[in-house]
Length: 324
Length: 180
Image 1 (cartoon, each protein chain N blue to C red):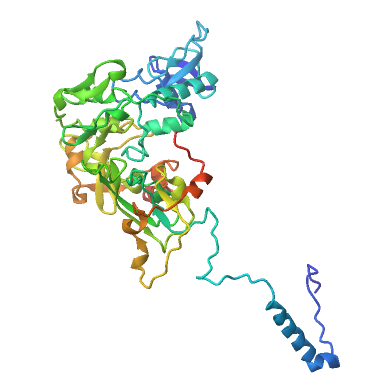
Image 2 (spheres, rainbow over the protein chains, first blue to last red):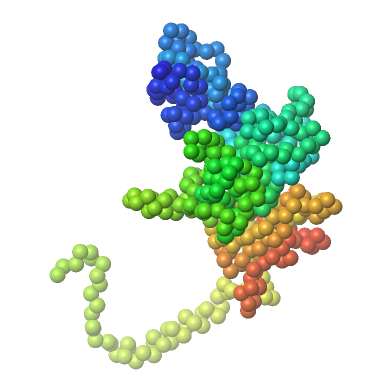
């Protein structure tokens, strides 16, 4: 066990924990944002640079500060380490710059994008970004393509976090899509647009922090803040069957995995709750699901700004649990 | 009991004088005031022959704008509907097909867009929320009708005609949003 101080809060964590995960154990405001790191996918992280933090003291033995900001998702903690996230001016300005870079090629077509309302890049730029852009050159553009018959890829919106590549590597048996070309021309693509056809390929929609990979069955159907997220389960031989149904009236518009406050899938029965494509794309009939109840949504989220009352969901849960 | 405040007025039941008993001076006094008003400046206008000028930011019937090329600005993002405190706005989005580039500005557009004018409180929050400068409130009044159904305005009533553009430049000047 090592002791680490993050934003003046001390916590004891296990050896080898990354700074980001130590901060997540504290929770709240000290957690750096992460666009590419995904705790359920080993090997992710270190690409987007949004989680950079300042290390004011390296360790007990060597208390010199680290010369540059470090990526908290891939830097393990050391005993006596002092980390500054919210309290560091350097981190703040740096994060603004990272957002500016991420948005250089991002089309900012949020009014069109299906991810709007649950987009991590939206949250990030809302919290850290500037008012306008200084970028005057033309943005790189790609045509949207179909990856398989259920997933739409908008390469314009991609921030190259590589999460979907890791999903394909780790969850499916064969990866048929990947990253092509280099530098400015880098793009996620499939060779000759070969269909991604695997039972778990739909999870790349869930891991995508932006609207680059979206559900074709939900394309332009509605906006997330008009839908009611309902927790549901079903008998499924391939996956846990524990999902969130996004409902409008009695219609199921979309099915996703259950995600925690960091946008990562929750553990179900001890393992990551990835859901299969059958549950995600095919079961749009409410009779096929056992609907448990409304999902708790953060009241600051735009999803609870709409006609869905998070307070109602919370109070209903409390009644069910017998709390007062 | 003594009252807690001294706002109470004691009303006397005093005997009227002879002049007051006649009532005539009071009647003529009242008629004189009425007569004087004939020569005063009128506060009312002879509508509909004369119309009062609206403030440049008057919030009347909505318009869904088209851009310079005549394409609809609205992309059915739903921000007006979520901002609407009266829940007056509903919409269904559609995907633009090939060949419709001249009709809609973005790849998504509002297939159906309805404002219930009976629910609408003309607060202008939809206009404020709109990221595409598509919806504006204008100085037009919503006409009255006999049927409730006729107050639900669809796209045929809301979207401006390509040839009969509705001027909202005065409103845009007051807005802070500038396209960069």
